[in-house]
Image (tube, rainbow, N blue to C red; front, side, top):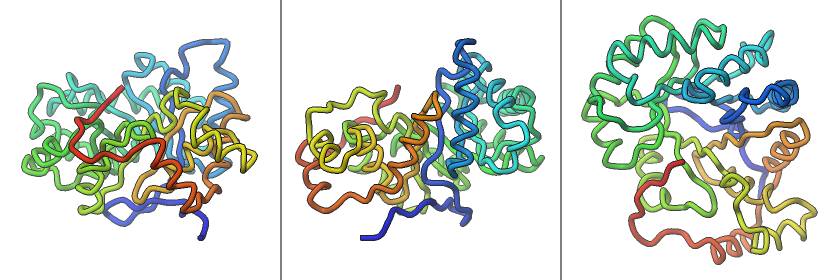
Length: 280
């Protein structure tokens, strides 16, 4: 087998890094600030150039941290942020985006996502996203935590330009494999997996641990390698230290064998029926 492809492709043909960096809970504790900035910058050096954040994270504090971390590096990064559902009206999307841009100290986002489905009609959100794109404030837009029925409604609402769906997906939460991932792949729309190691809650006394011991790696690295092996999926694990970033990057070079993949399937069964989309 060959090594994992380092990129996934957006619907318009643009390639982005398969392994990126998440930032949830970053920028909220002053004593960790320096280490978090070092970690993000180290990840960029290692090619983990998709960086995901949101206006929700730390009520904007995470975006402010990212502005500092990305000083002098902005052009190397595919920068993603997300809008709260209650801010996702036609005008609200624009106002939230402009506030995020100010905190991030940049003139545009590479990708702007609806954080989850709220009460505002999707048509309004799409109109706001398209206005931002026309004005050059975002390059792509997408969604997060939307299931198949929501995605179908989005398309009907004029959302055919959606670039991705960011979802909770890891070896322990495989529900999207039944219908959502096939739906996205049929439209050449990659998924973006958040919490790809389930917030470190994956059992180590399982196939993950057995494979890890054989390879001299950690169970977490095997779990991340499994996500990275899935077609048309990129992953955005968070790492607050340089050491953790390097360990995550090593997972991209792990090519799981057919035997190891069967071991993981036996321990973490793929879905045989529709499972409602989970979210954190």
